[in-house]
Length: 158
Image (cartoon, rainbow, N blue to C red; front, side, top):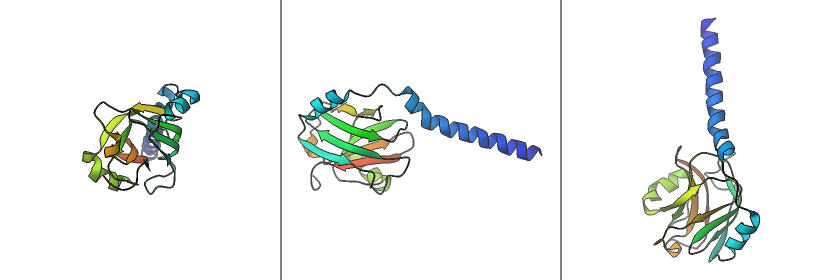
């Protein structure tokens, strides 16, 4: 009987922890950027592409969809991301669709910022980063080394 009670308590604790990891970013996320501001910022884009759920590394918990606009100073995402903790946006020199493709090229990628909202975001590109030296935007979960989504904005590798 004690084994059953211990097992059920451990199971309840594990479920509660997993729910907390998933729900905490949603509950603590700042308000998303206004849609008009997203559209206005995206008008300066040099490149436009799409996040899609159809990537090899995307699944029901890790996905993104919507329009991605890349300018010299900002990346704008108008769409939705699966909520999660510790998301980062990277520019990558080659198109990747899964964590097993991203991890080997992560050293040649540049992290441009955190993604704290899941319904549209504007991420400023740090000074000195040339978007033309890269061709793909990746959203990556640092906490769990998990691929979320990617979009190729320029053809070919640099």
